[in-house]
Length: 202
Image 1: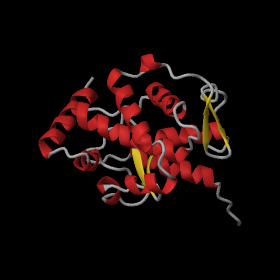
Image 2: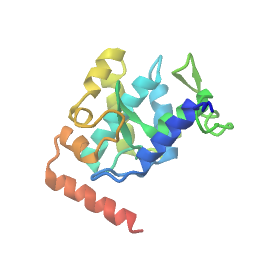
Image 3: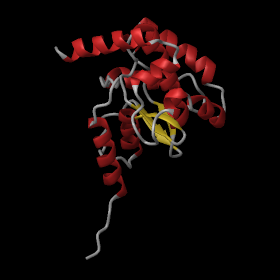
Image 4: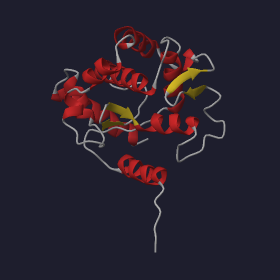
């Protein structure tokens, strides 16, 4: 008997298992609306905005916002992939818009942006800034200015930080490591964990 494996289905199953795993200091509260508008915000300010640059700017922004204010902007879980951190939920959304994801978009996200040339994000709508807080916008703006003009290789190298290095390939990056990379100490990490525990109780 010949068994034919669907690569997309296998990839989906693996990512689903990763998302379902419990890791110390990993917090999952993906905010779909805020994340999509953060993507539109970034893509609207960069001439050619591909998956790679979008993911890295979001990672740097989430890391900084978590460090300063105790929460990330997107709430996504980052996977330590070969070329740097990748937000799993947004990657699924991007692939669905592109047409090769496990879940078909059915026009849900294609109203916000389109994907051309395999990995270029072209915004269709303006970002709804009401979904983003003042600090979200400030940090996104700052990171677009810092990293928006860097080359693919430059931003890749920078994203290979302590948190990425301390994670096995294609595994979730821990909040603990991301905060340590950002310069936070263990007491702040305890505070973040306490907030997450309280949040999950409601």
